[in-house]
Length: 220
Image (tube, rainbow, N blue to C red; front, top):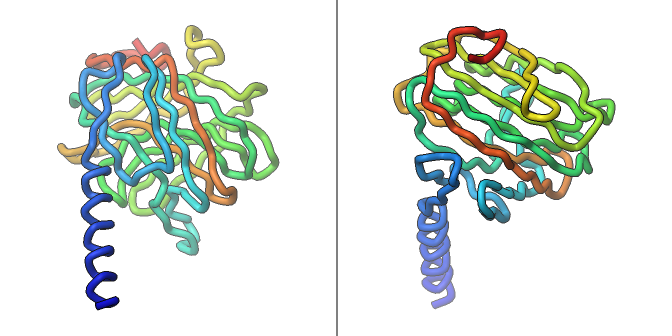
C-alpha cells in the first residue's frame, strides 16, 4: 500500500510540475505570452516588471574545459519574430559569486546566448556575454558601479548584437557576432545562483520591437 501511495504521489508531482511549467504570463512590453523553461522558486509580474527567484546551484554554462556543463537556471521565454530588438533593465543584490540576471536567446540546449549581469570572480558587478555553440565562449566586459543596468539584444537575420546602457538612453556596443538560430528559437529572461542559496532578479523597462537594425554601432 505504501508503494502504491508513493507512486501516486510521484505521478501527481510530475503532473503538477507539467501544469505549472505550461502556464504562461503576459507583460505589457511584449506582445507574446512567456512560458517557464525550468521553473523559478517564485516569479511575478507587476506592470512591465518581472521578478524571478533562482534557487541554489542554478546556472547555464558549458565550460571550455568540459568540466562543468549545466542548464538548470530558471527562464521565462517567448517566441519572437525572426528580426527583433529586446530591451530591459536588470537589477539584483549581488549577494553571492556568479549571482546574475540575463537576457537569453536559446536555439536549443547546446546553442544559446546568455547576456548576463553578474557578480564576477573578484566581486565586481560585471557585464558578461556567453555565446555557446556546444561550448561556451565566455566574455567579461565592463564593470558597473550600481546594482542596475540596461541591456539590449538585437537580432538581424543571423547576426546578434549586444548593448549595455547606464540609463537606457546612451547605448554601448558589447558584442557583435554571427549566430545561426533554429527556426524555433526563443528569447527571454534568466536568473541564476550557482554558488548561493537564491538570487532575486528584477527585469524592468521591458520593450520588444519587431525591427531589423542596420547599424550595429547605434542599434538603429
